[in-house]
Length: 462
Ligand code: GDG
Image (cartoon, rainbow, N blue to C red):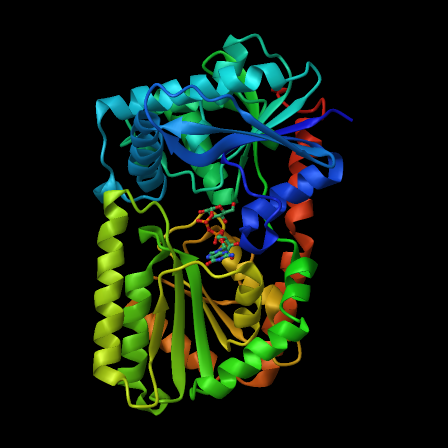
């Protein structure tokens, strides 16, 4: 079997699983199963002109190679083109796009630097798997340096319709760079359809069954591979003795009978203000819930240097303060809003101890929190998942209560329905959801992608 080389903007710290996010666990699994190399940024920013050799660490069969980024690269590549242009545009938020010419130069420069730094570590028969929007030009850069081995790409975020993508300067160039990969993976059928529209309607390219594509004089294959979680691992984490103690402690300390939970990175795509407004509306419209229901919202800090993230943080602080000011009593706090990161095992316990899981982003590639919430539930007395229709997970998880995250009134109604849902219906929905997340787990995701990337079937246009 060829060696697997994973390239992503950030490399997770595999020695600290309690902080690992869903993606790190999924990729860590793939590497643990076949060994290999993981290459990317170490998260540090250094002064301009500092020359730092890549840091190489080996643990068992896995080698990680990481390097820091200069201030200029951070500003232009990471905070700039990646997170002030591609992230908002790919999430349909053209209002939040902020483009400057040097961002694009920085984006191209860092991808070229990544290719240079990766080059000495590559072997001829490696199979390379590149992740996410930061690294779209990486295959083109590696090809320029003479690499001919298979290179696959997986987009973790949505792929927007052509009219929306058109707002990203040099979108034609981006799509032509995608065509340098041998396999392009998307989260959902919807994303794949948007990409097909771009290739067929815009570029007049060829698209055959199985996603074989010809355009720009290049050939590749595109398919969808919905990402999943390691279900049993997360389930086990939610059922330890420590988790039981954590849940019992919460039930003693918080007088509310029903706990609603939301967990995400603090990001404007996650729909947090509308969610808080919907919770406020629930208390207003169904006052029986006062002192009986509370919302715990964990919003872990994210991209704090990017302007749009500063604004959303302020908005959330004001909103949670307003709800607590209006409804709180001496012995009851309606909203517990935490702007910090929580260890993964505590999250698992909190999910299991919460009767409602709120996952209501305005747009999301997949959303692993929805799957983690389901994995953690007790099958004979499960909680209810409320899920936005605009997350990738909604394509698979139709047994959740599906809501429009822009409709505050509908979300409040869904919360009331979840709180009062009979046991039989909860059990039935949970069984169906658990079956789906087990069938499409992290292993299925990485195995199906890597199997196709390694197969002779790809790139063959009928
Ligand atoms: C991108 C796409 C796609 C969150 N807060 C804490 C914490 N988390 C963990 C969650 C989950 C992960 O982070 C978040 O994953 P999501 O999928 O929900 O969202 P993104 O971070 O936006 O991820 C997304 C994903 O890539 C994978 O392809 O699904 O659509 O946007 O695992 O539990 N983990 C810990 N403490 C926290 O406070 N330990």
